[in-house]
Amino acid sequence: MTSQPVRQCGRLYVRNTCIAAIAGLGLVSGFANAQDCTPTVLGSLSLPGEQFAIAVQGDMAYLPGSSSGSLEVVDVSDPTNPMSVGSVFVGGQANNVSAVGSMVYVASGSAGLQVVDASDSANPFVSGSVDTNGAANAVVTSGSLAYLTVFPEGLRVIAGINGPTPTLIGSVTTPGNANDIAISGSYAYVADASGGLQVIDVSNPANPIIVGSVATPASATDVEIIGSFAIVTSGFSGLQVISVADPTDPMIVGSVDTPDFAGALDVQGTVAYVADRTISGLRVIDISDPTNPTTLGWVNPSGNETDVAVVGSVAYVSNGLGGLTVFDVRDCQPPFTIVWSTRDGGGSTVSSLEYTVTSTIAQPDTAAAMGPDFSIRSGFWEFFVDTSPAGCNAADLVEPFGVHDFGDVLAFLTAFGTMGSDADLVEPFGVFDFGDVLAFLTEFGTGCP
Image (tube, rainbow, N blue to C red; front, side, top):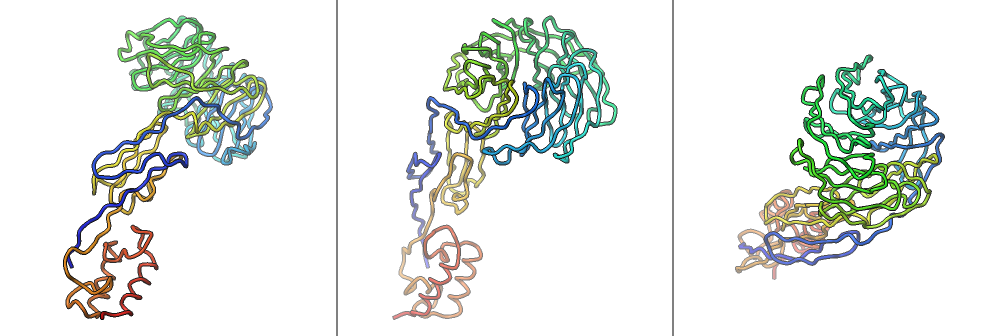
């Protein structure tokens, strides 16, 4: 039997709204644009101490209590109902936190770096520590190294962070008061308060060297690196976008003010989420055009948002008054593109806040292309119609046509096992199930005239 492919249009749904009905083959793009947005509260939790930082890893959030000297472990598997599950005293002033897997690293002021094993979330314990020769402000990790900003000295590099005796191996003094730090490649980027952004070559961790800097309009408080840009919160001057394409010559290329004190941020895709303290709380800023960052929305439920970590479409915000607030930021996500490849181009998907989703036209696996905010339903399905005289019905698959026999049964079973079109008889097309088997048996039982 000769068959000819026929293509059926599918639909693209984003945030449960159909945005495109696509026909034809080739590369097709659909767009869903972020509008002005207002993050909505999903849940909250009061905690002891004053939380000025947060890290989220899997289903757990880790919040150091600055005044309590403790690390709080919170189960956020249900964002609408965060639950405190564990706590450990780390001493000093627990200022900042970073987490990798079940290992948590706390910049704990006068207590230096505290390494916490949280593999048992209900019973976390300090597995190692090191004196940082100054008040530890912030910490990030890379492999077996930890990089800490230390007041008032600058940068510290710690080796062997997962062993019993972490060791200070390198340091460099910065001109300001080192607040926060980000690592990208062989460079450390330090938000250095009055020292602006300091760029430090850490290719030799034992001998970090300042290679570039740029002044910021106000105190540099936090930094994230996205591609060739450093996104820096600058206190009462809001958010600064700094090109670090040449690390030796960083340059401010864009900025946007915020109403209060921009103290910390997280960046996902082309959106920056800024903890802007008492007046404007959490601010959401589009940085897709680095030269013209634009505020998308804001919310201020508690009055003292101090840090933010965004995972998917959920923002976890620490509260300087003591606690955690969880926000739905789904409607604040940036524009994204859905791209289909040509037939047999593969069925992979890529999901991120700025989506590029590749799925296959005319393949059954298109139906499985889903992410937190999109689904491709039906896609382009290929089904087949007869183009030559052949069997009397759908069960008459092979010669001799006009007679139903074991050859037809064998042909159907072969097609069913290989997901061939001859076995895809009834809806939902592209899914090979009992309905197809029943349809074949019905046609086979009816027989030929």
